[in-house]
Length: 99
Image (cartoon, rainbow, N blue to C red; front, side, top):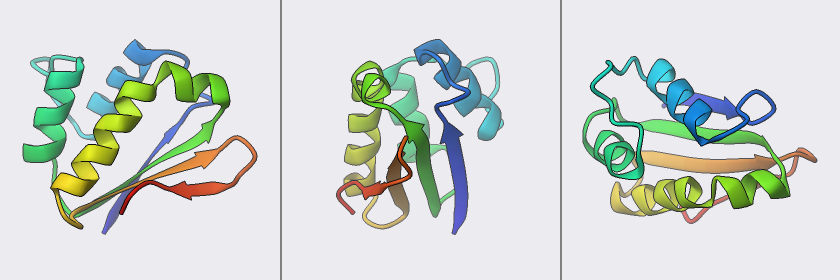
């Protein structure tokens, strides 16, 4: 299973996350950089199986990126094992979400 990490010490805001996501998954300029486009790509376009991990996620980041975190949790459930989603908090503690 491939593993892709998103480091929130480097990702400062939502537009930066979308840019990094597009880069990590080699998406073209047609990627819409919004929740609907992200859902479509995660559930239908990226190579599966994959593990996606958010690292260095502070409490502030959790609030700022809450909708994206929820999207990945829902996609993990929808894809029934083909996608694993984890969050590693700033203190290094790993928190597995739903799967």
